[in-house]
Image: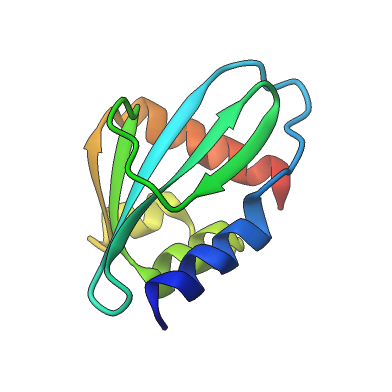
Length: 109
């Protein structure tokens, strides 16, 4: 899968989703490793989820993960805690913010 295909699929799953009762701001930079390598971000802002194919320098947390595993993660087929525990997901930054991203995924799935 190419970088563009991964980003398009993440946008399809996440972009524009309303986050009921979520008033915080969260910026997750995703660094895809291996096939489809590249960086994009997923941001919760003003109660809406966005995904864009750019770096996010002022991010709250950065995920290092393969494209296939990130797509599984955002589609509910891979538990983020299990992925982290088994080394499929590496976190750079706040673990608390990474767990907050899991709560956001639970809202949209």
